[in-house]
Length: 270
Image 1 (cartoon, rainbow, N blue to C red):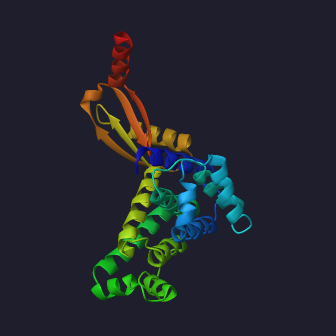
Image 2 (image 1 turned 90 degrees about the horizontal axis):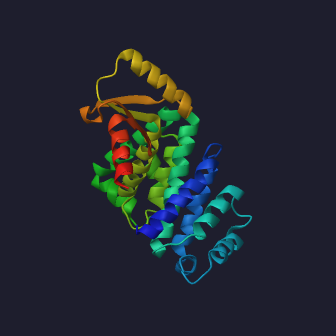
Image 3 (image 1 turned 180 degrees about the horizontal axis):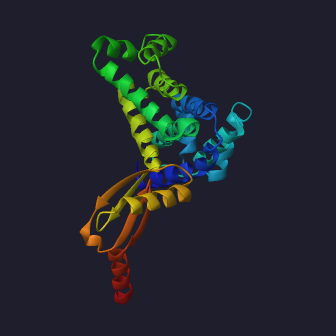
């Protein structure tokens, strides 16, 4: 995505995040349904990405089309997406797909924490592995003439113990692959699941190896700070001199001596 679209996607994800704590599986299903409407309507995509249109006008256009057909949370999420700028028609559809997959992933996380995310990822990997290893399955799932329901039923049989969230993503990849092979699209979904899993991993870099007592105290403090049981990964970087650098998801806390020295140097240079 171009920078304008990337910024709009970041805003949309930020807008969606507070809604995910209590979201049900219906939210991503609704977002995927709207995606299908967008993909089938080039005129609507052009209208929503037209830089000459006011943001409020675009949001209102989509709201009129969807009001009463989807939940308030889904409607607000899509309206927010429409009210921002996009570099291309494809970008707004790709962004909506990302929001829907993020919502599915958050539901898995909400249901069973890190274990839910692991199960989701394992199910998706199982689907990819089975399909990649069988050319007949690939042809069957790629067949544009085959009924969507038949392809969806076949896909779900390939992962018989798939969770509800896994079934939603596998079904989506088969019924609306958006120009890709289903297994390729599922690979993209796996990347988003993996990104969400980083929220459960704390990577701690220190200048010397931490003792077990230090690790335990740090883990307890981080669990309390983030409100969940984090997996602690540690690394050693002597250039830090002292202190720690902690990374959880996209958040980085740099409390190292090297960082403070660098800050001091920048201050002196100004």
